[in-house]
Image: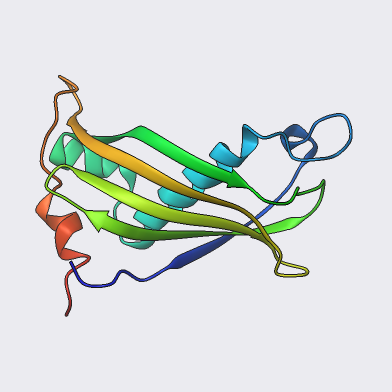
Length: 138
């Protein structure tokens, strides 16, 4: 697969994302990563409901490696990146980062492995051709 473009999405930290001290709770980073992967699919023209109905394919996270480098705080604006690092027949690996917009500080980085499964049986299935084609050189 050719080098993949990095997509960036911006989100704000709200009270619901933080602990009592106004620091982003560690598990909330998963929400930001998931939201960015969903927005990545939308940016490529694959809304998930339509995608599932057309291909009978859904994505399941099979592994995550996360490095917590610096904390994010209440009202920070976060820039979340999504890049496909590896694409196989029935899985993908994403490299993702979160940085604070105001000072460009790298706060968090993750490697996220996802598998594609059939939406009814949850058995592994191939990545849909349309999605693979979105990553081929023009």
